[in-house]
Image (cartoon, rainbow, N blue to C red; front, side):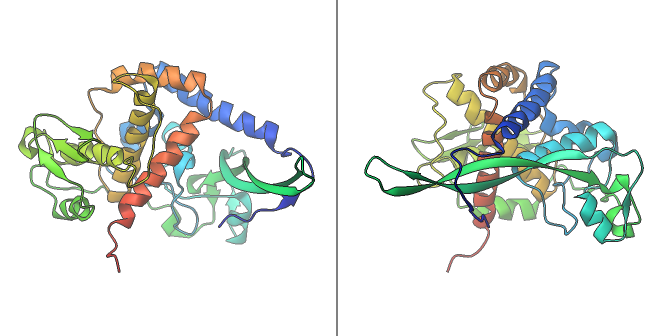
Length: 309
C-alpha cells in the first residue's frame, strides 16, 4: 500500500534519476526491437527456459509485476538464469546467504508517491500526489550461495495435450463472462463488446488458441465499463492503435505466464515492431505505462475468477 510522505520542496529529489530509469529501460527495449526481438518474449526463445517460464518471484514467492516482469525476464534470458527467484543483497544476508563475489545485480524499480503542499493564489494550502520511481538492485538466486534448495530448483516443464481443449484454461476464460464467438478472425470489437475467435480446430495447437484468446481478452478489458483504457486510437494502424496492441501483447505474455502456457508469437509482430519503435522513440515513458496497463488488465481478469458476493 502506498504511503505518501509530505515534503516542503517543490520537486522530487528523485526526479533526475527517474528520468534515467525511463531512458535506460526504454533504450534497452528499443535496441532489441531494432534487432527484431521482443524483449518480453525472450524467455520463451531461450532453450534453458523452454516450457518453464513463469513470473519472476521475490524471495517470499510473491511475483513481480509490470515493468519489473519485463526487466527480470530479459536479464534471466541474457544471463542464463534458470531460477525464478530474485532478492536484494540484504534479503539474501537475512537468510544467511551471500551474493557470489563478482556478481552484478539487476536494477528494477519501485513506484511510490509523495505529497507536495503548495499555496494557491487565494493563500490556501493545496496538497497533490506526485508519483515517482526509484531504483533498487536485486540478484537472481543463481548468483547467491547458501540459500535453501528450493530457490535453486528450476521449474519442471509442463507437458500438456496440445491437440485437445484444456479444461482448466477453458474454465478460466469462461469465468470472465466475455462474449466470445466463432468467426473468421481474431479480434475484439468494442462497439459490440464481443471477441471473435477463429475455430479452435484451425490453430496448430491448443496453446496457440489460448495465446491469441489471452491477447484479445486483454483488449476486452479496455471497455469503458471495465478499465476504460483509451490510448487515443482513431483508426487502424495509428499511434493509439500501436499503443493498445503493445498493451495487449504484454497482457497476453503476463497472463500466459500466470496460467502456465507459452504465448506463441503472432504473425503481426513484424509489422507492429516498426510502429512500437516509433511510439517508444517518441515517448520514453510509454513502455512503463504499457506494462502498467497490461498488469491492471491481467489483475482485472484474475479478479473475475472469484465468485461475486
